[in-house]
Image (cartoon, rainbow, N blue to C red):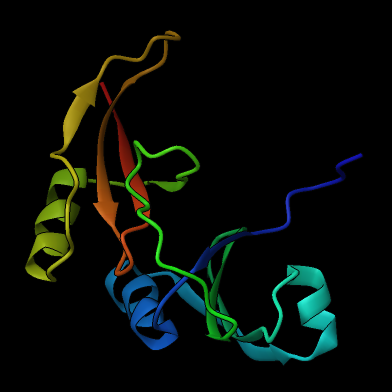
Length: 146
């Protein structure tokens, strides 16, 4: 049985570029950095020749693990949100319009535009938008509005 949430993870093509995005562009906090190589990581991943450069970034109690396969790398997938198997992470933000302007100035790619969605369960509406990390993984930004 499951006991607790651990972390989320994205496989990235360039760990340094991804760290710059998550820490310097989005404002997450740098966690640890480490590498894994050898039979243990091959056993966990099921990937022959796996050699991983890894780092974690945090926001509150949320941890995102970023993994670059420098050995045993696979193919680049199409992570667009409408593809089966795609995933996204979501963050609650304050002043989404101002944040979006700042992210656009920093060159962040937007999949859509900030759009108001009616809350179907009786709470406040939200304004939400999907953005892309450097490898195309989707990040949802949402702000509750009255």
